[in-house]
Image 1 (cartoon, rainbow, N blue to C red):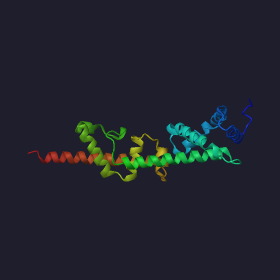
Image 2 (image 1 turned 45 degrees about the vertical axis):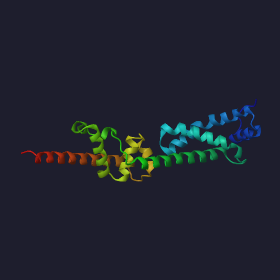
Image 3 (image 1 turned 135 degrees about the horizontal axis):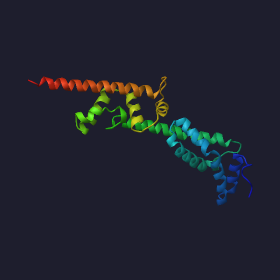
Image 4 (image 1 turned 135 degrees about the vertical axis):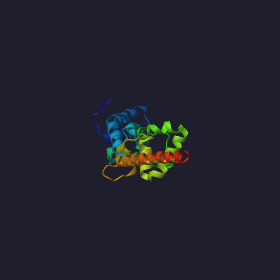
Length: 205
């Protein structure tokens, strides 16, 4: 059995194609996977900014690539072809995330982590607190701030990934929107508490 470390990627593809379904030819695919798995995962991470999904995306890229090997043209460079598949799959993933954000932007969660003030739970019941949060978000934040908060606190995406996903071009990217949104929510909540206290005082004889 010939050693494969002396074969180019294109020669491995050619031998797999020439094997015409021979089960033993799977070793050529395994060698291509071994050589490029880490590289493909890195490509996916560079495009999506999401290290957690990069390995899964790489698996999907190889599956699509191996399914398409019968049509791989002689004279083409394997890594260029593989990168094209990785790029398209990663961009599809970003578009899919963007659609999910658009669909869920009006369904803000009851609990989004450290921006939630401790006093909310003690002021009103949990359900009322959740309704209040949604109201404050709807009235206080613009569309981009809303999406950034959902992506970061609900989907738990890192800020650099959100910056890429939403195409933010400002200097600080998604971080600037987080800071702005938290400041607006804090101010809106303080105004809400102040308004509630004033209304309660009006009923005191």
